[in-house]
Amino acid sequence: MTDHTDETAARSTPFWKEPGSGKWLASAAVLSVGLVIGGYLLGDGLVRAKDADRSVTVRGLAERDVTADLATWTISYSATSTDLQAAQNEVDEDSKAITSFFSKIGFPDDELQPTGINVSYYTDSNGVGRYTVRQRMTLRTNDIDRAQAAVKQQGDLVRRGVVVEDGSAMSYTFTKLDAIKPEMVAAATKDARAAAEQFAEDSGANVGSIRRATQGYFSIDARDGDGGGWGVSDTPFKKVRVVTTVDFMLD
Image (cartoon, rainbow, N blue to C red):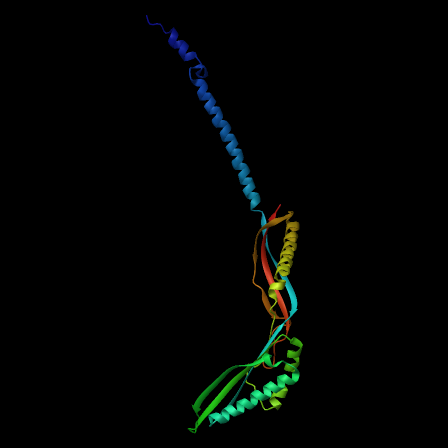
């Protein structure tokens, strides 16, 4: 007769009381705790990642009116004759008249320099050969008031017999941009924050720190706009403009 007592007892013993089951339970417990902690950290990480995406991108503008500190005026003039020397003599007379014109206004001699000369030859419709001598004189000065006075009196050049070619006009330049760049960038950033705060107020959030920022290029244009057309000259009054793009965090 077979004794089934030991087999029955073995089958009725709970698995956690079996030899070696304690190690298995411990491992399972550690795994469960790890899964819980990992799930929590993953969930918290997703929340933090979502919060990190809360931002607003705005643009800030800064403008400043400035006065040019450099004036340049390139005057082109020419003379045509069947004789090269005659054409050159006429151009020389014009050069003297231009030099006298600027000297009378009060410009130092070294602020006016010849900057180019060109000689061309062609045959007219009657088969006669002609020489054209073309020359340029350039005024370069930091005396803006005197430069404006010269522009107002340029009619005197015509009365002196100088035929000024098209494109001969005073040009004004602002060269001290580096000196005002930091203040203008700060002003543009402040303007951007004001726009971000308005957006945040409308959406029930608070503006935090700058996430990233991009500085646009500086532009220098005529303060009163470019009229264009004949007889319109440059002016020393300029407007400097910069736009920055700023990405702010939202709390």
